[in-house]
Image 1: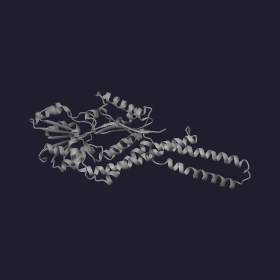
Image 2: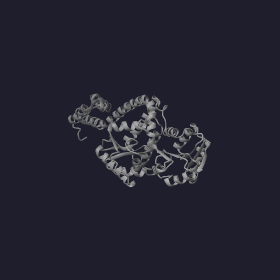
Image 3: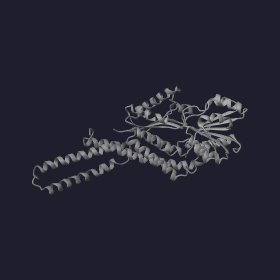
Image 4: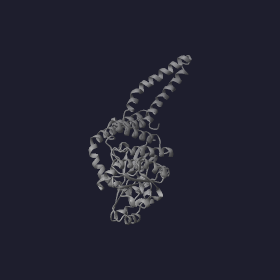
Length: 428
């Protein structure tokens, strides 16, 4: 059965953060979501990607159009659970070659908000592994994702994107620098001490922050990050009591819940005698109540607000991005050859089988007739000779069949159809 690669999803360009959150998948529920996807008959293989900047389903399907419809329905059901608005204006779809190109660009961080950022490759591997463990990855997506990892490696080693890249955390610090004229007299609270939190802490330290409070659900993580940065670890349940000490609060957790609401900020500001507070939210899901922005002397920025700074940083990496796009184009073509060879394998096998069947039948007839007195050694020699003749006859047609689909186009398709018709292979 032929399979087509299909991608349906949304990212930071096609949908605002509240819409992306409405269809996001918590890591703990990805396996269940993959099981639901498998319930659609045309979706034969699937991987779900869900990060702060994108939510996508990558699938190998028996029918691309039906799969696109079913996958949009899948997103609608996810959205309905969160009571969000219509998704149609925010979803994009890619099929075939364009789907391959899109995933390769995602892996190489060419489709990221911050071009060249390294986190997306690790996230891609994480979600691929989750799907593999759930049993929803077959030969097509296995090959597709591993080639995407290879593309990412090529882009990092053959271009300067990685060396000139800026992470989401560094963009957040750039924003903070626009807010404050200096950091050495400001106090910062970091909520979340995972990989992103660790990166954030390092960026803050390099920017001159002297007073850093770190909190995390797992207190040991907070202690570790705070220790490296000479900061103060705070028990997660206690951090609301320390908010009044923070000029800047940065949220970078994977928590799906609001950790700081507007009412809490109003109370803290009274304790601070209305001294301004700034909140930067860069977590996979928003950690701060958007209503905080309606409070005097409180200012909140989320991941979408970082776009402008990220786009400014992209200007200096445009030449390297062009080189990366050329690598992606080469690898898309290579993957197309592999897909093309898969499509031709049944025809090649049927052609070999057809000729070998004729050879064996005629050989058996001769060996039971006028050649029946041949010795075992002579029979073996005759079998080898006729097999070699068949291989010589089929060498040209099979070599042509193995050529890349893209090289032959419609003519190549007609060639395959003609072979099937001439040798009666349509039903084989």
